Image 1: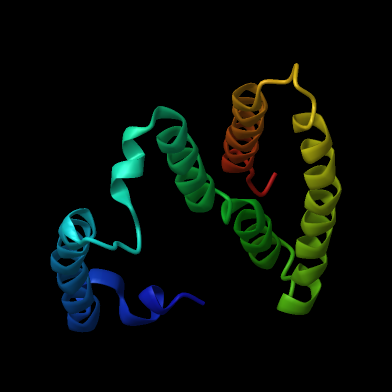
Image 2 (image 1 turned 30 degrees about the vertical axis):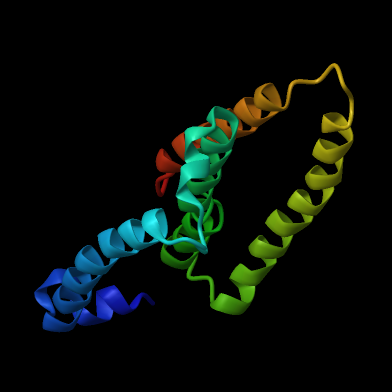
Length: 140
């Protein structure tokens, strides 16, 4: 279970304090990294179009990808009373599919005629389609 559910999200003073601290610390981190002579994250690289595109796509993928395992697990736990040990089989199937698709994508991207942006766009479109499909799952 999520700790946010346990603490009742923003009704908890702990979570409110942590959210306030992160709202103050994150902009300070950005300013520090921008002006530091030897930054950990060189934010000026985001001025390059291809790098910014890749960074934004990666950030969106990291935000969206947990739904591929969370939605089936929540559904099976609620509707079929699956236990965590049974839900791990679903995660294993999803992981095996990814292990098969990653070398296939690398093989495809190794060809000069294939545009990497088109491959990434197709992949993100499939992720969006999967999220929209899982959003329509109900007990029927």
